[in-house]
Length: 94
Image 1 (cartoon, one colour):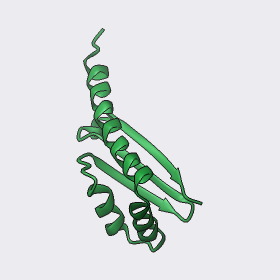
Image 2 (image 1 turned 90 degrees about the horizontal axis):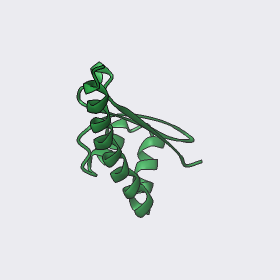
Image 3 (image 1 turned 180 degrees about the horizontal axis):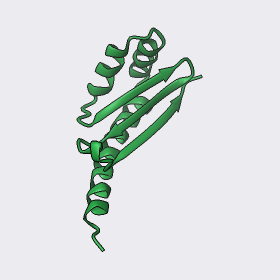
Image 4 (image 1 turned 60 degrees about the vertical axis):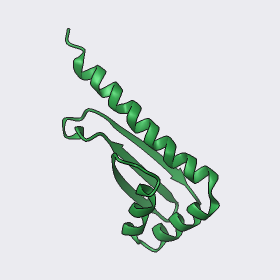
């Protein structure tokens, strides 16, 4: 039984969780950041939403989806094309 892929996936997931935690920290600690992010999302300014998320120091790939009710972030490891690791966070603001 080869456990190498499972072990690699778990290690990648730990990195994604750290980066997701950085985003959650920023969102839970700064109402200014929250307001900027919500405004950009609600005005469909995807470039600004991406800039704000990456300004936190995120290095993982992040697919960003939003609608009038909230935000969904899907973090993926660089080797995600092999399906190694993905982490999705869904947040509501309305």
